[in-house]
Image (cartoon, rainbow, N blue to C red; front, side, top):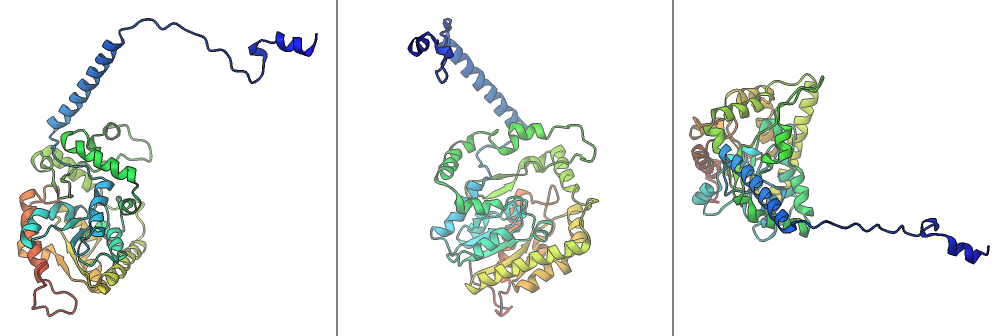
Length: 374
């Protein structure tokens, strides 16, 4: 048989590199329109049930997600002409406890809120120190277990703000169109988060550990206050306290005291370097120790004595400080879970903080002379 005849004899399945024929299968007639409608109705019903569940739980609508994109929007205000603004950096205490509307009422101008929960103020402070466009004033919140250890759960927000892509900015804008209307759209109520927080059996060597629950609600400019459920729901308040209580005793694998001392000193040195850069540009820097109470305060005083932390920080940086224990107007405030103020008392604290901010001496200024009006 000739080669030509042999090629003719080969079927498609025998020819290398030739695609197999696709079998044709009849698709039975179905009521596709009704099926699509039924699927859509089921989807909407399930979503409505999930939304109803979280609203019944006490979730407030009308607020926004505490995302890196929202933080970046506030950070860009400095680059867009507000380089002389008062900026607040720190952890959740100055995020919750300093009310922007109250400060604006007293100062005539709303500050920029750049604090991040669970995060030392140092990443934000260093970012401002590196920005020649910023020549305003900085209020630096100091939460001892975070500031003097360098803990920065949300520290990547600074990098995100400088590298945010156009698509990420568009995504943030689109997200904000729906965030105030949906209770379940909070990251705290994502299905994966809810599943993770179930009472799963513990594994040997991996003790169960409660994670921080939702504590706050936030407006579009990051004006923030404590969630009413933390204040009004005794069971939820006890849960929040139990989360903090896990940190009141050092774990068995805690580093030696000498290592912790060096870490503390390194954080103070970072702060001193950042403050030096800011002061060289005429930026006014004031440190703030916001209130804590109960076992939380006892733990902080034990693990981070004022003499070796707060006092040393002020001495090394040469910046003034406002410590809540030194001001009668900052006493007797309500902290439902020992770490953040109730809403009325956050407004009182902001008023007292602003008064102290006005009066605290700056640098080589005459201590009898109040600071310039903000």
